[in-house]
Image 1 (cartoon, rainbow, N blue to C red):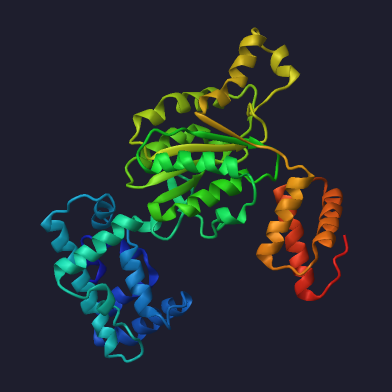
Image 2 (image 1 turned 90 degrees about the vertical axis):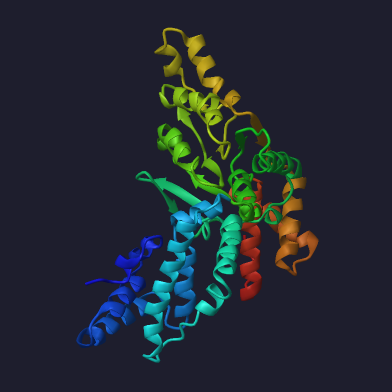
Length: 390
């Protein structure tokens, strides 16, 4: 059977979508098969909750498709007339298939008025500007990814923290923002190590910075400690994409005898400098020198001084290190007050401070994380009318 998907050239990737597969079969079938295939398409539509917005769904998967046209436009490259013509032919082919649903009378599918309004040049110009601004494929709707089995996998519920949610640490945030700004503007930049006590907001700051600059095509790729040896491989893959990436390793900590120490040092010293300048490596750690030291490392080493130097020098390979110090009482209560104001809590200042201090004692210390947990608790108590008992 000559289906819709078999007729496409540029938008071939749409065949992976369940609704589009069903539409393809439905538009190509004979009269005796239409009922069964339409029912199958209904199932796919209901499964994805698209029954009230089929128009939006179809236009969405077309715009977010990863294809040669969207990739080149995201990179600001000039596309040939052959590619543009093939892209437009695919759109018209899909339009013809969609038109067959109109006669059924069950769906509003007039999304072409939005997607394909105007002349061919106007449509291509509109899409070109969109891809140039937003990227292509999964990068359009996703700001954070993991790297699994040789591929980037979108994090669907990525951290939405904004910089305004993170209180105090203004100096630390400015240093990071200035460095990332240089990175985005094509200026010399440094890979970063953010270190300090737990709960001080190191990883939240990284996520917030990515969220702030997502409209400038900045994306986050999270890497597990065990995948340090894959960083060069990931960097090579990302160097082909017309976006900027932060390779992020949260809570980086290596054993003293790990071969990954040398691997990471080599990467920071050399391999990134050979790329296109679209990758920055950022790590957080609870310790300045990253590597866990123990006496057995020294006892088992023929040259203990050399081993210690190897371990302690890793952090020096980061061009920029930013320390997030633990909060004192005044800093902790300052964060509490600001968060309480953001939430609109009605608790008076003295009572709030007393309860916050009690919370810190019970929970084992003062930190921005403890402050946020406390305000979340107070907010829930206020909304449910419960007395905050700590």
